[in-house]
Every structure is written in C-alpha cells, then in structure tokens.
Amino acid sequence: MIWTALQTVIMIFAMIGVGIFISWRKWATAETAKFLPKIIINVALPCMIIYFFSEKLERRELLDSWLPLLIVFAAAPLSFLLGKLVAALFRIPKTRRGVFAVMFPFSNSMFIGLPVAQALFGERGIPFALFYYLANTTFFWTLGYYSIRRDADIIGNKQSAISFSGVVKKLITPPTVTLGVMFALVLSGLELPALIVNTAEHINGLTTPLSLIFMGILIHDMGTKCVTFERDLIPVMLGRFLLAPGLLFAVCAAVSPLFSGALAIDFTLMRNVFTVQAG
Image (tube, rainbow, N blue to C red; front, side, top):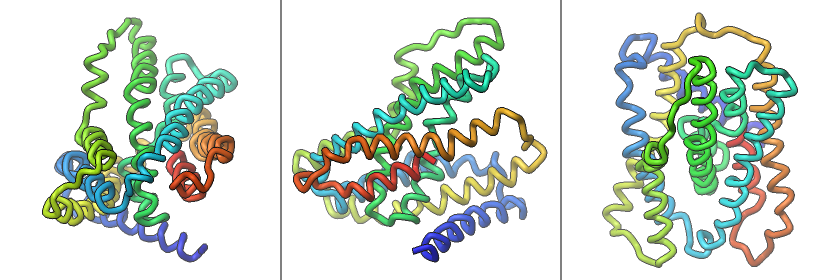
C-alpha cells in the first residue's frame, strides 16, 4: 500500500516534471500554453464527466449522492469560517483576511485535485472528486470572490459592486453545465449514444496529463524569485494541510451513522477522496 502511494506521488511529480522540462526547453511558456487550460476546462473535463456518469455511475448511486453533496456543501462554508477565526486569532491584517480565509476551504480541485484523486483512488474516486469540485467552484465564486474583493476594496478605499449576474456567469461553465445535464440524464434513465460516450472516453484521458503538464509549465515560469516566506504562511499551511482536511474528515465522521446498507455509497472511499481533496 505504501509503495503504491509512493508510485502515485512519483508519477504525479513526473508529469509535472514534463511540464517543467517543456518550459525549460522553451517549447512553451505560461503565456503560450494558455490554450491548455482552455482545452481542459472546455473539452477534456466535460468529456470526463460524460464518460464517468455514463459508464461508472448507476442511477441508484446517483440517487444516493445527495449525502456526499450535502457533506461537501456543508464543509466548504464551515472551513471558510474556520479560516476567518484563525485569521482573527493570528491578527492577520484586514487587507489580507479575505484571501487568508479563502486559502482554507478552496483548493485547486481541477488541475491538481482531479489528477491526484484518479492516481490515488482510481476511477472509483472520480465521482467524489467531481462532487467536491462542484462545491468548491460554487463557494469560491460566491464566498471566496466576495472576500477577495473586500480585501481589494479595503486596500483601494472603495466599494465594488458585485452583481448577481456576474457571479452566475462565473458559475455557468462547461464542466458545471455538463454535470447538471448528466445528473438529469442518468436520473431520468436516458442514455447517450455509444459514439458520444466512446469519444468522451478517449478525450477524458487528456485531463490528468494536460493538467499536470500545465502546472509544471507554470511552476518553471514563475521561478523561485517570487517565492518568499512570510509569517502569515505558517497558519495558512496549517489550515490548508491540517485544519481543512481535518474538518472535512470530522464532518464525514459526524454523518457516518446515516450511511447504511440502504445507501449505494462507499463511505470509506468517499471520506478519503474528500479529505485528500481538501488538502
């Protein structure tokens, strides 16, 4: 088990290393590689959702998915509030408290989270990673966006107007729309043509390698000059790697009595995927 985990980590870093190598050889930079996240978000991830919902999820499992969704949609705001509390305890400057609190619940659940979930837990972990992504995206563009804008307003001594339509536009993306459509199709018992599903299966394979290669390009492009250590990073790292995953683990433990033989959900797998995603 330990060797399997180590192999997974080595594989992830190897793919990131490919991105670093590509950037080092100047085959691509963060600027010229901007097409990669567009492919991932607009093509590869929707295809992953289509494939896994069509081939890996039964209607019964999806009917029971209300509980995993409830867990992640409850844990995200709780973790955000925990970040606010830690910010007050550590006397983080008011101009940075919004960004500080955002670092607790909201992770890079697409470019790092999905590849890690697939590498560690295999295909069975992907649906839970997608549930986490849905909650992560929803609350980032509502709670998170508002908090970051407040920091900017304090610094600029102004008051920005955040429109409801602007937030909705951020939430309506190809992956979230595809999730909604596939939920409806699977619950209604309708099936997509095999040609669409088979095509989605092949394109789905792009998601993990392209995500990690793009991260490698970004890492090399940033270099080490912009990396500085500040006192505020200590509580951020504490929250990111210990408190946020610990809180999600605790929320899962609190609702564990609700999981019984009547629910078609693998509780242990769900808890482990959510905890890793939170970190």
